[in-house]
Length: 497
Image (cartoon, rainbow, N blue to C red; front, side):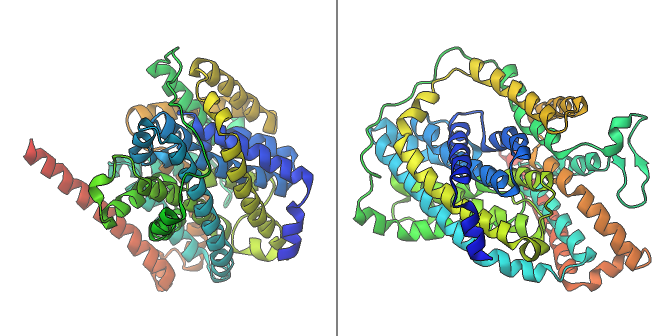
């Protein structure tokens, strides 16, 4: 099974697909305003005509390229290309200003590669074991885990617990539109025949992330001036063997932080890079140098955000729960090909799973080669004005949405959710809880109904399962603790004023 999976990606067609995915991902990751989530959303319809392995390989390659690509603009423009690269600007930008942009890029690329490789090792060893445990899960456990995932992302994302939970509830509500999978009742159709099938994942995702971002940039105003890109000379990876040894503990610690945070549903690299940077600063012998341009900060952030990729794929493949917004898109890709992620995936489609692992590794190697070899080309792409780039992206979004099912209702859906996403950003409602709520809404509903059927409508019987009880108690504790911290911070801020 393992050998078959490896051999299934060792062909020229799959390699070309991975190469295209990595290059497009790096471009989307490196240009501020275009994220890896948008890149995956845009390319998701293209995978419909591919084989399942080729399609998922392209999405994984986009994920790898997009996450790593953010370091280019973070260092050269001091503007993070993606949320995963926010902390890279803290030391990468000052290094570029000091004339060490080449060294910062080299170190960032190298540790992006090493962090991803470590996460692949974790994925290969953790995922199959977790899948065996998950085979024993019933409706109680799945309901509790999904509820925990929703409350966690609602509580952890953003600085307002109420807005996070409201976003998650809205996502679950939108997932209930159409005919119920259990019982067959019509819900929220408003007499519109197209709504009987509910909203499809792809148009919703493209709308919330791609269209909403384009509307936001358009509303904020686009400068016709090109971004100022700092010049840099690139020689090797810019790190000596002595520096490499000195950074070993920082590297391992940051990788473990990235993998751990990646596994937690809905958080991902946007959080892990800041956490890893903060921990590296706390544990450093010279914390005062952080923010002035030292490689320690670049190593911590780029290792952690890339190692979160493998971490985020673990709950996706073993439980069917996306680890972050990009894996929610990949879940859409799996669904598009009729593949149901979960513990049975390893048993029924082992060759596909190990093929994805192999494609992940190949994409990581390709990312290292392409990013280092083509860095000067990507630097030029950064200078393309957004008023040219974003309208082209919007057209591709509409074409891609229509092309999947040849249904205009999907196009209107993507535009509707684009407007919803725009107003969410304007009023600081996090989008991640909504998309996770939309993806997991039907899973939560179906397992709740099945569980209540088993217990004759006795919800308290769910707590007889130790696993379900732990996750439900943890969900409540997460909400209470986050609410307490935010109220405390609010009153402290009020007293300070």
